[in-house]
Length: 501
Image 1: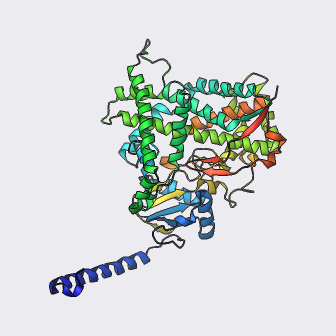
Image 2: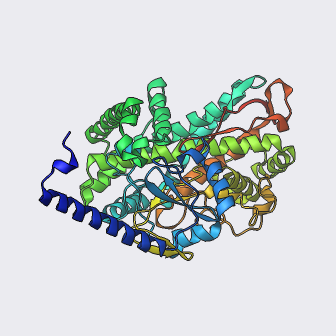
Image 3: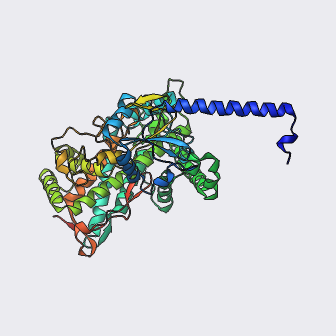
């Protein structure tokens, strides 16, 4: 090794100048930073930042941090600054007052891989591309007219599930599994034109939702990206993408080759792939709706419309079993409106105010995506008196907001009555209740998700009484949770059903 004393005098002088510039720059940078009014920041560790303070249920860990530091907390996940908002006021500032600045998304490795380079609606960065794709979804796939056209699918699949339960009356039924199968079947028929039953397709969906919720070290400590390779996470993600892409490509090719035209040029039994192909053919803009974009949009529907809806209904049923008074009141409402007919249909749902209150209370306590999807600031901004730097990731803890004791009386208790005669809705206007997000990046599929949840829940309590296995009492039901992308029960709900009629 060459000693510093053996270097030429010229090089020594250059090195001293570089060191002086470096030290001076850091001092200036430090002085500049100290003039910034940053949000409260917990003590962090070298390299990992505050990762050691995040548990396997991050919504709970982050709520604890904000209880100690305030409604806005700046943490560091590895080298990435992350702003955590856990109050209605902070959510309003981010999603309404400064919505445009916080409308982008961070680029995350696993979602980026699974969604064709973030070509979907949920994870694509804010800009012209996102506006074009979201416009197609809102105008052609998820508008009120389109949702109404798929009514028969929802009602048919609900009837199938209700009959399946009827065949097992008196014995234990895995209601959690039935709900997952139901939502998968509905989304398959709506998006792809038919059901794809079997272990292979179900396996794809299970792995898809699991991987979207996995933690990737490389996102937050780039020089440790090799950990994701060593753990097999990268390989699993790439393998799933290849399998799902092959499946969707085959389905898309079937649609391209099908000739089901009738008089007037309308396709019989149009599904969402049909509609996207139609939009592609009739496009008069410069935006090219290619195959990858179509497949990414369909993937979004599976991510948003299957696991989240099934788990919401499962949480609702869990709370109803734990609260017989609420169950009895809900059954009374649906039976009065049902008038003894064989099934509740979608025409009946608008009259069921207590049913709607039960679902809102469920979504308040068990927000499907407890941390929503991360946002990212596109410029420096002043937020509630604090200086937030461009490129800061933003997490909105919708779960914590829904359980804020300063907003909700007896915040941790299941009390649907709080939503009766209430102005709270799902549209993101009231920031105390944002289970589907708010602002530009709010979920565009709210109507589709809520109508499935209402229809299924109404028919479950209309047709059957439910109890736990081994004659366990409702209050003994284990309500442990597990968090990935969605907030799920740790164990699927198993019940014994008894016909009401």
